[in-house]
Image (cartoon, rainbow over all chains, first blue to last red; front, side):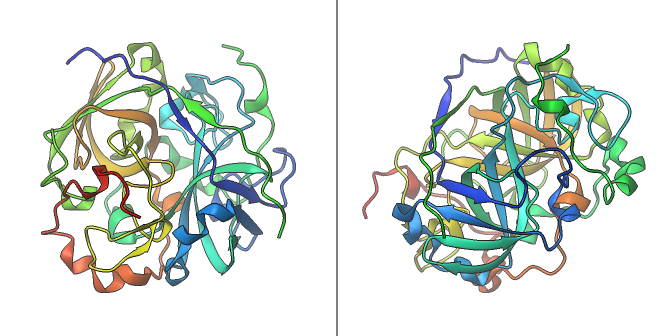
Length: 171
Length: 171
């Protein structure tokens, strides 16, 4: 409808790092709901620890993080859950124009600037960009249509990641 | 538990811009669930339009965007919904160390690189960073504790934003 204005690049400084058992993409669970009970922790920048006050009252955290192994985005991908190609914005594939990941994890404990969590589905050493409290009244919708996922969600429990998105783009 | 490694800044290029009726922060709804039916649209970078293939099958989109009016983060804030201060990571306040916003909006239609949406709760002209399909099986949890929000969610329908987070930090 209107021209897209010239938008300036935005630079963020990671607030910490996510520690997980996953040192390589191959074999990782592809969503937090396929990683129930997998333990990890966040090493937050100690200078930001004052930002954690009252976080212990929440059971789940939304983590935003840099998918730092993505070297080149793709506009169409065949995601882990399907055998067919889709537009990148119709998938949760990491090979996005802006590789920002989102996972809702379980909060276990906070000790100083270390946050113990469970249900981690990201690589060890992932740079963390933000922590938000998960609020179902803000984040959940009860009448969602989920497109091609409708026929593919049953594959989630046994689907594991591979390195397909770490390659250079083939298209 | 471990030292936080030196983490490099990350730069993202906005993929488009979000158009809404809100030209100033004052009086805006503070969450998408308090903005039901408010119409807006996304002007996506036309070079990325191929990434929208199959997106029309989804009823809701998770938008990640740059909270571009935030000039200085705070570690503790008194959020719109409460009268008491909390650590920034225990709130959904925009004045975060990395001002990335997240909203789940309703998808109405896609025409070329224009995406018509509803339930918008962000400023007109907000730079868009990512579009993800909303998948309840990935994004919802059914046993969440929500800390201080428990006693404050009833304020959401009538709470509107003000400019408090656009000021310079006072602490």
